[in-house]
Length: 412
Image (cartoon, rainbow, N blue to C red; front, side, top):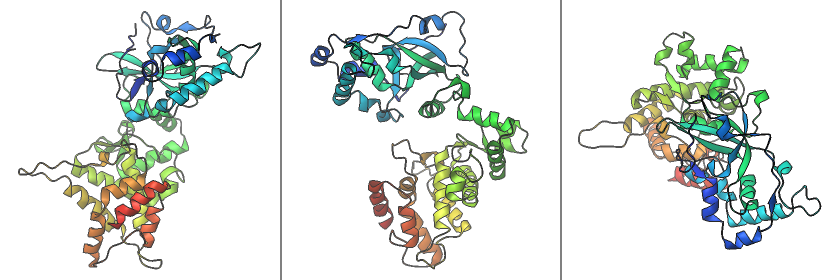
């Protein structure tokens, strides 16, 4: 029998939808405004989650289960908790007003019938996450904030049951992998096997002879990286000592796509090879995809553009790679006198909520990269946002507010 945690979040990004609804928006005024609304849902032909998971039930992560679930069992990955779901924008005063308007004017309005109309709402989509520490599962939906809130409102502030297409994550998935799968799961269809995660798709693609997967596999081999131990399992010499990637995002779509298209294969290769050398300094055995994109962008801009239009690039490949090596050595010194916080490739991430690669690079490498340039070139002036290379770098962010911050950062 499977045990679900339905009250408190087991994962740092999750919030309970019903608890948020009760705490933030449900009051006497709202209760009065929804009085008399109905819910025509008839789930008599759908199995309840409690019945499905009793006895010796073992979930199959390749299947979608069509079940009804109590509304207060359902959690969402909140953006405020570094999640992917805009639940906090829905469970608000304005969000409730929109929901009530919809309930009182549903698309299928017939003979004055108002309320929650089952045929208009379909099924929610959710995933069951497994928490190793507690041994319990928790349900995290990735679609249906508005539907769930309307369900609560049409049932006079009570959780009620709702129909859900539910998939179970494999027990050995990491927290980040589960979030990634859910965030990308806007179209869940058992027929196209979209319940597969990146790892499953990549490995099955490789074994199935998919050109994109094979190209990515061979690229990883060239740069000394592995992904979920696939290269080692396939007998690639020395792969057991390769630097592991948490994700092949930007690389998995093969030649001429993703990072290869945006930054050029040569510069992506340099970025990966540099990351391998940096990891020897930081001691990291596994790194995320963000650091690869950050380094790829730096190589693609700073080894191809100069101070002025007709000048040579500010760095050649060796010079820029040497800078990165020196930078991470500086930030990973061991001293008995001083306890300095180390900085690794995995610290170049987007978990702070800012997903802009240019901004991350500016925050990380300035002003040291300008000081390095002046030292190795023997010049007094560096490069600023008004130079050709500086303009190219700043303009690579499309967010106008972050653009101003990047200009400010590299001009100091």
